[in-house]
Image (cartoon, rainbow, N blue to C red; front, side, top):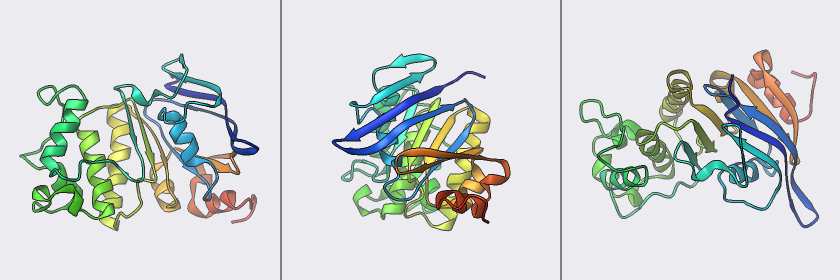
Length: 242
């Protein structure tokens, strides 16, 4: 299996503070990987390195087996979404959709999946009224869900990285997100990397989980270790307890 993304010894320090230390892992096409850790464990630092937002670090990054000087976030076949997605608040869903399409190669060439005219806003919120609202009127959870719908609609990324995509989502939106992530991996061969505090989502969705503690990768969970109770023990350093 091709190694889509490979991290070797990724390390980031701020003065004497170590944010990440010797992080090694590989992502393969069609995989769903969760990154777990308590607040301050280094999850967002790792994701920002991958997105190219942090360029001063040590270690090696490979994307499609090509060594990079910075994260692959500026590649057209990658998709990065963070906890506070930057949509254009003065525009409605359609205006944002056109702008995002232009950023991804143009509206005419967009691969946006539209089923019987259903908008991304309706998919995200379950309401056809939402499509006529300015994004600034959306709740945080609706904005996060819509951002995922819009960016995913206008691209078929090989790599999808989502930092805390579950924040502010209700149960229905969370279930749709879980379904979409699994579908992307299964049908498009997308490698999905996401962070969350919802261990039940990881149990239902992920193929494996990477456990960070104090900037170090301390465990890798697969199979039965993906059960929420076991993940909790790994997060808290209670190996062997359930």
